[in-house]
Length: 225
Length: 187
Length: 216
Image (cartoon, rainbow over all chains, first blue to last red; front, top):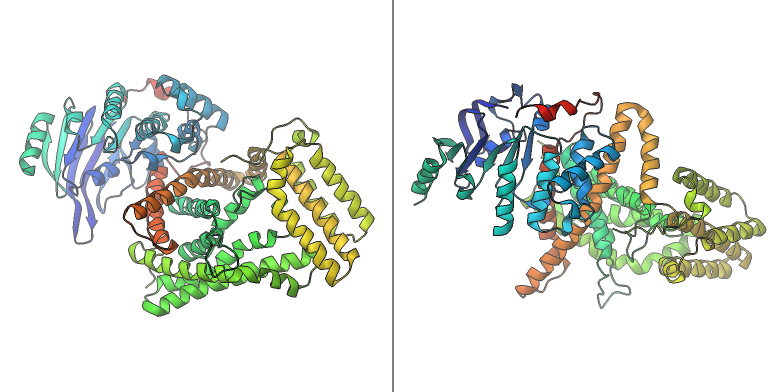
């Protein structure tokens, strides 16, 4: 699983959200940090084609996100910042099964597999609950399950712990560590990235630093003071 | 259908249902308390345009067919559709359509101020009130044998409340459209 | 949201949903083709019998039908006074038969069965029909998903306004509510796309089993 950015720019009125990015992302765990408005979320959303570049192109395993969005999203899952906004189906188990149904799996089989997954993730007791009645942390874990069900090779997390309390944040961190998939995590929670392979620091749509987490965080702290 | 429409239409259907769950608001000078559900229908037409706007109440009608208690007072089911007031329910669909038909060019154009408000008010009145009542009264006359005149008379008590709703709808649509453009701007 | 369906084992429960809907429509049509009080009386009696054999709690029924029955009574009287009591009787019997039959079908049929029946009608139309059936199911799920959220946002806004001592008409609520809901719709739309909407039903099912063994 490799993501390539070839001279990618994303424009916005009066400027750029991202300027002239060239990247090769294939490490197992990559972090993205930066101030608000630095382009982090844009970069994350370029990885699964939710945002398309105004200039240049993004290739996921050789697939152009502009042309092969469906196949790209089969391989790249995304977990968003707001837990409740990711709910599609009213009942938990159906929300988890939904990704499979979108890909043609019949309802019964999809449900059975969702049940197995929830069991593996220790979330089975939530299966028949209305998703809106769950706590933010539970919703976020269900969102992760809903993404995992299609076995993506890469999962992008866009500020996943922002809305969570400490306990749920720790739970999510554990889950992150156990994932078989590669991850790209956009976050303000600098501790989350401590043992990552690579961290990108963005500022005003450009890459300020690209390297080991400790240094990236130090640089970031420097720019903030 | 793109994902945005696929989400907007059920959202407004849910708004119509939620407004039906809210208790009616009594206003001293009105003979009957205002139920808010038809406000949702007007808003759907006004904010989503004719086609999407009509699909929102259509979804609500589907929920009624399925037997969900989505109408004001927790009512629903085929008994309602078989009953005398079904015309008022089914009339939501062409009503929202007509509201959208009139409102859409206003939102897409650059008309400001009172002109835009008047146009949106007209949209809500013609679609959300006139068309809906026409359907309801017609159905009542057909099903229940009473003349059109009698049926119309019976509905009079609700009209003042609906006028207020139409004003609310027009004002709200304008205010929302300023912050959150609802239609792709033309030219 | 809980439906009006009441579980049971009656004959009406066991009939397929599609058949029930078609039968109901035909029944309704036939009722309008006749003005014979005797026939309508039999039809009404039959429909009431249908309703009765479902053994529904009376309180439940009355709550649902109260408004309709009241209106029915009013219409009978209006007809009686303006036209004739015979007319009133006809109208009353017809409406009673219709409402009773419709109510009986609703209480004896699961919503999921009705939706499945509707989807079954769409599916044979090829991949467009397949997609329409799927979209219908998804649209319904989304309505049910949004209802609690809309109610929550209304409550939230009311509390916020009360906390700030703002007394206001519904207008002060509608605008921020609509804006908040529209933003929520944007987010859900994004999530929907990220999960892989729109579905592509024209391709054959991809082989999922091998993927577990692939290296990420």
